[in-house]
Structures are given as structure tokens and as C-alpha cells.
Image (cartoon, rainbow, N blue to C red; front, side, top):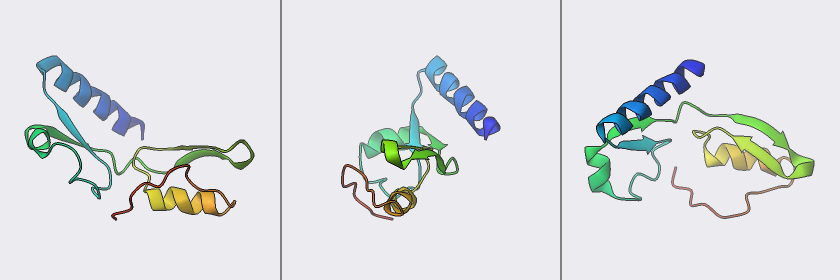
Length: 93
């Protein structure tokens, strides 16, 4: 995973240096949100492979998940302890 983060850091720094933009994509289920024109001009930064729950403290009501973790995976983990997300994100995929 460290190589992945190092690659992202380099790509972000390169985009910042040249004034470019990045379109960040996780699972791709909500690509229709946002500004498609900007996304077409931007370089794609895939984050879907960076997934998993890093830490979960049910008694503290705290969970830390990586950026590519699917909402259904996060919701299933919380449900095991009778918990849920404090908002209702749309599920499209």
C-alpha cells in the first residue's frame, strides 16, 4: 500500500506543479455526480484499490476506513454491532 500512496503523492504533486487537475474515482458508482466537463479534462486517479477498515471501536462509535472502501462493506461491519452510518448515502453500486 505504501507504493500506492507514494504514487498518488507524486501524481498530485505533478498536477499541482503544472496546474493540472485530477478526477478521483473510487468504485465508480457515482461518476454522474459533479462536473463531467472537468472530469473529461482531468487525469484519472483511481483510489478503489485502497480499501478496508483500518480501525473500529464500536464502544466509542468511531470507525476509520480507507478511501476506496465500498459503503456496503462499511455498513455491513457496523451492522454486526447494531450500528449504522449517521447519514443515508445513496447506494448505486
